[in-house]
Length: 476
Image (cartoon, rainbow, N blue to C red; front, side, top):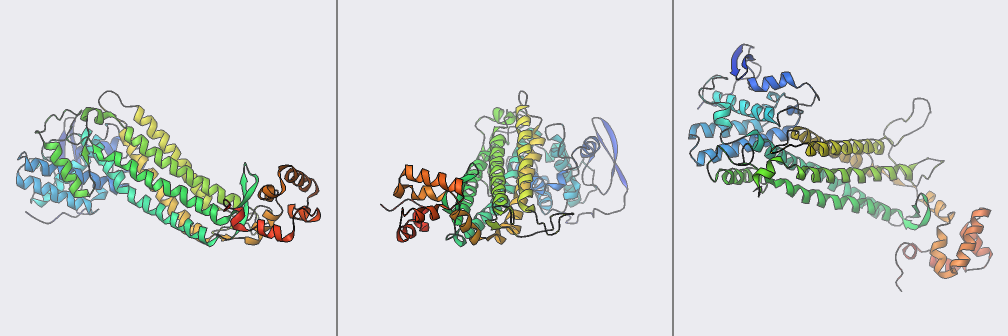
């Protein structure tokens, strides 16, 4: 077996390939073949190509390697061909051949173009490893050999699930780091009293640390949820071939292939209980997408809260200061905008749109197949990637540089009506209501009125207004 692989930049001669529709010239340097080229010519849609999603290319290569192993163990494929296909899949996983996957992610055919793309690339790499020219498929054929015991309808769904799971760790790592940053800030701000707000109106005292801790807590929930929902994607229909009946396979083939895929990836896959149902149902993708949407909504809510808390700097709340990242206006000198939180929210809106597209695509399956799965794959991977980038941006360009304006927090708290709630147990509801109404009409602070009316002594006020007493349940 030759170990040399022809350079992608060799001289541009052509080879003739044929399929059921006819013949086509394919540049000799190309590792893809005629069916891939037809897809490249047909689908000029999103501008997003398979080459832009290396995790899906790797997933396809993993699945093909597992299938070749199963075919070898069952003696359906001879040892030389099987081992060469496995070696070719390893080459693909290095990223060296990513430019050979130029088809649009949105494609008709339920992913057949993607499946044939990997079949042809693996076949041509294998041919070179065996000392032959690309396109000499009588030695090793994309459909007969690389696609043996397979269909697009079990290879593509299994690969998409694997790609999402491979992509998941980057997102969860980013969210974990963001949670750590919010937790650090919550400790830094733990002694800073401020006013909480409900319906955007003055509420009761809290600490800035408690507010930031809540951001960490809500995101921590989603790390656990996404990981748990990811387990739904480990049930796959590999071995079901065209519609789930397992036609063109030997008994036990699917189990061998799935076990090998688990071994290769370190992800514990299992065979779907009903392969026919699993070949058409996209429910797991819908649920997983919903968890990404939930994370997006939380991120946008936090981003909006930070924008409100930092609004000003002189005519708004200005309880915190966000790090300045760029000048904010082409006309207003000195203006700095909260560009990072704004961008986070826009990313969230796109994820919500992706979720709607996934929902509609999942609904559109007919009978034994869902032909819209390429759109699901595109939007799920895009949502993961966009959220990962947004979370990292949020963390490293915003959260770490937030500063508390402690003096402003105290000023707003002292002049608010929210303090009266903390004093309610000591003054009684009627007296507290009267003080609040008078403060609102006169503009005087709650503390000033209480002192003027000798309702509580300075010592009593100092004791009552301690941070721990106002921001947590009393000890007795």
